[in-house]
Amino acid sequence: MGIAAIFGFRPGGETRAAGGLYRSIIDAAREPHLFDSLGVPDSLDGRFETLALHTFLVLRRLKSDPSRAAAGLSRALIEAFIADMDRSLREMGASDLGVGRRVREMAQALYGRIKAYETALDEAGDAALQAALKRNLYGTLGMPRAADLAAVARYMRRQSAALAARPLSELRAGRVEFVPIQEATGQEARP
Image 1 (cartoon, one colour):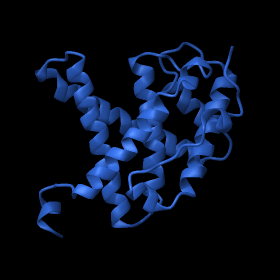
Image 2 (image 1 turned 180 degrees about the vertical axis):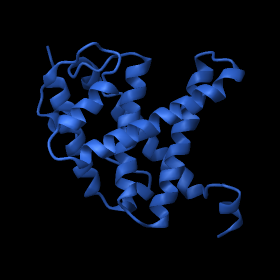
Image 3 (image 1 turned 135 degrees about the horizontal axis):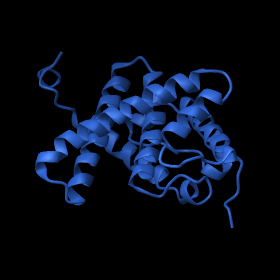
Image 4 (image 1 turned 60 degrees about the vertical axis):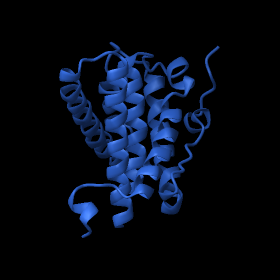
């Protein structure tokens, strides 16, 4: 174990790769189809949830690789997520005293989503996955449309399978490609 690992410093390559992955995650999480056609609330909560969902999908792929490189990249990606939450809260005017607590809450929320989605994706059928999506992605809605829950469940399964097929070398280079959402859900945009 090197001195950098002891003190928790990330090698520059991991940090750069995680930054590239995180930018791709942000792009996928901001896809208008999620909000316009799949009924995800276009709010701070809804945008956090789409970000957590896509971060989970990449972390799931990294977790499937037992290498130290994948583990290091996972940690760096979580650090990029946390740094983005910190920066976003400060840009929205949160006081310095409250930022740390709120970032911890967001990190805990991410870990909760990871656990819920991981468990649900490992189960046969989509009942558990749709229940997790209803609680999290659509949590601020009273009752999301069943068709939207089914479409997002298909999307997550398709993305997970597509990411599993990607070589780790692409992720280590900071590149991740998500299947276009309309293709992954089998839906066209609403008029």
